[in-house]
Length: 307
Image (cartoon, rainbow, N blue to C red; front, side, top):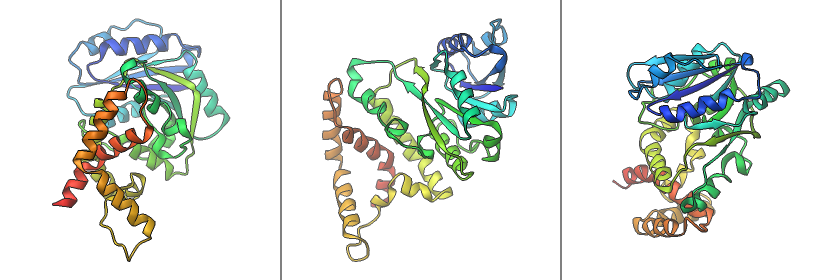
């Protein structure tokens, strides 16, 4: 049996669309349950859930205050009756074969499965959307860094053995899914991308939000991850922010550090940001997006090192 876990907070309209997409699944409704964890919404979400009369086996958990997505997903896992967990966000609409695809994948092999998220088209963000659709799992990544809870599936026992999500991460942090995935990797779990497990993002993304999310991640969560798991210094290439030691390290590494130090100048960033914004509706080299995300993700650490 599959347990679909959906955290939600003040997105009743999107949540209704998500539930409707699950009502239309090709997988028989008796083979899955839906658990919605309302994380302190005040937009009528709890009332709508409590009055739900649709065809789904839908259960809900209510938080009286906003406690964050880590705690929210953990409560969903603890409430789950299925041995397979599917994580979906409340602003996602599931393709009709999504759950059948995940069930088949788990029956075929052991692993952690990452699905295909398709973003709503937006002509003004054409280059960014092209970039997002060709990174991570889409460009061949098969390690814990490709795991995102927008659309993913894991066995319930594996999630429990990994220690669940980190409850100490507050609701203002983002990126708790990558630490959860790292803990799954310590269990020797393989990360497998399933292109056929399609979910549709119900609204488009924009450059400003992507960079703001990167900044919040770098300011709030990344230092915690590094303290707890030193491997994240390598994962996010933070060693490039270290001082240059020409005589104590390979010349190639020193050159990389010098290039990074030069590129992190505010004037360089402003220029790349303007060019990217100007041409976002047409074509932007992917390296520009890589640079902008790296800058925003690491700028707080860079500033601390310069003090």
